[in-house]
Image 1 (spheres, each protein chain N blue to C red):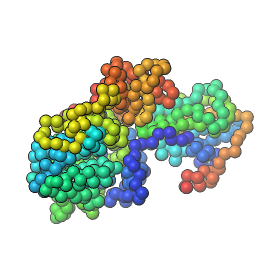
Image 2 (cartoon, rainbow over the protein chains, first blue to last red; image 1 turned 135 degrees about the vertical axis):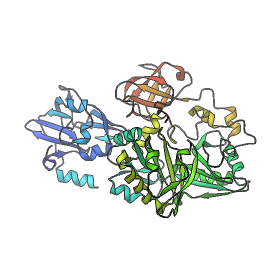
Image 3 (cartoon, chains in turn green, blue; image 1 turned 90 degrees about the vertical axis):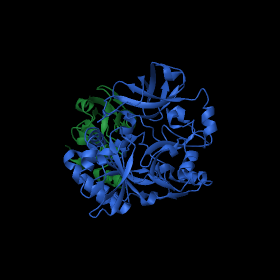
Image 4 (cartoon, each protein chain N blue to C red; image 1 turned 180 degrees about the vertical axis):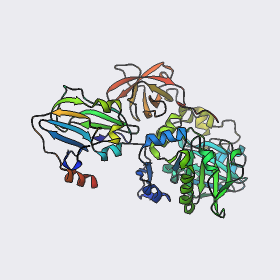
Length: 123
Length: 386
């Protein structure tokens, strides 16, 4: 599980872990709790070009549907097959095994720090 | 990530109300949702785990937000025969009856359960969101009858224990006592007591909204926490868990039970919702909505159907239904839908045009993609009787 304090965040309750020119993306524990038990995820396939702020996937719980926004522009290099097979990983380990996609990118947009995101959620 | 749909909620009241069990829910780690102005538990961690617990063992719901209205007096039965769609006077003491409060137009103002708690006493249990509407209608409709109407909603808490182990657990709760719990039949009730000296009255009803066997316990708010905790403690070894409104919704959907605001509203006739049997058209005397329901809805009025589909993507409330895989106008709309936790495939209830109700298959527009669905009789899930 990634160290939450070193991740970057979006206002759409997603987290981003940057490693070189690749970003791993998932949803936050707050978002997973709000959704309830996740039962289905629809993720973009490797090779898909995504642009920041657009809807690229869906996360469905028993009671609602969440949209996955690309936090960054680039190309999907991997969708997490483990989560496709076992969507409950989003609830049980949102910052770790419950990651959703990896995106290779050229430029990193401005994202929220842990403190900034924590303040947003506390509102 | 943004929610595009929300769990069903009632109309928002200006003030936020809390159940007498609120502190117990907070201590148990519940997350809350607004329901008809009440802060009620939506789940205690995993709504799926709560759902499965009720299908296989037992679960405990706090339903203290629901409305309880008493009609008392020599003509209370006659007043209810006039006010509601069913023949309430035909019930025996202790018996419960599912009924409808209709508008003059024949539409459904609320669905409710009536318990005959005495020869001239009836308890009407209505949806929280419709408390004011039902209470005021009952007062108005009982006006010419020798009876009084009391809205006791603030003075009655409601705890439901549902699931195959409900009887086993309830029968062992220390301080809980009722004559012959094992002889209370489905849709019957009996007064009992709770407390070290039996100081709290409890109405014990074998009713529910989950498709499982179980009981609903009406008790004074100041005894609710003690009873809730005694139930949880007694049932812990049997798999009893507290359960929130999220699992309640998937349970009732699997059981094909309508939810006011989704399958039922004032523009819907009972027959459209498959509730024609609830309207007693042979009872003597007039009742509100009689002329309209006897005339019936328009021939083109949509009817409620069950839809099942393959895969994991569920149709949800508000999604359109089509007759073909491409093109055409919608022939219906989904009112409730989910990936069924028990069955493992998507299920939905939908109102469709009469012509579409006899189709072999229809298509649900799931956010722009049409998914084939098969019509199926309700309920989707039926328990094996004990």
